[in-house]
Image (cartoon, rainbow, N blue to C red; front, side, top):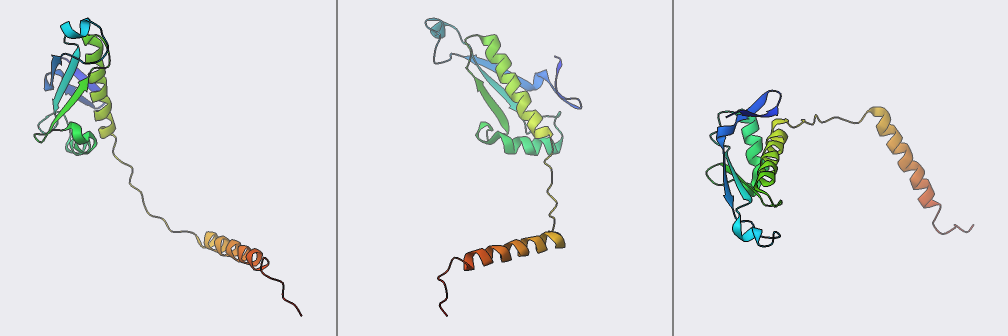
Length: 141
């Protein structure tokens, strides 16, 4: 069981993934009734020893409805007509999801406007005010 490389510093063991094959709906003709080509991939996010805690928490948030109450991520792949391509598609989607969770969010540091930007804003407001006042009815002397 070879490890699946997610990022240069993060990999998961192949044994942590379970795959089951089911009959897919959709195109495929008679083949779709005979061959189990769709893949149901399961990955236990809650108890995976490969995931650091921060990645685990972000992955749980990213997974949404694909996560069971037991903390198992379930992905279905039925796009292709062959079992191998569906299997590769499911694994690629899992890797992409974990890769997204592995990148920590960039924290926004609140900033304040500079004095010069405040002055520019007030000057432009004053100019706009003059333009709008000029649109009024003319004053008769």
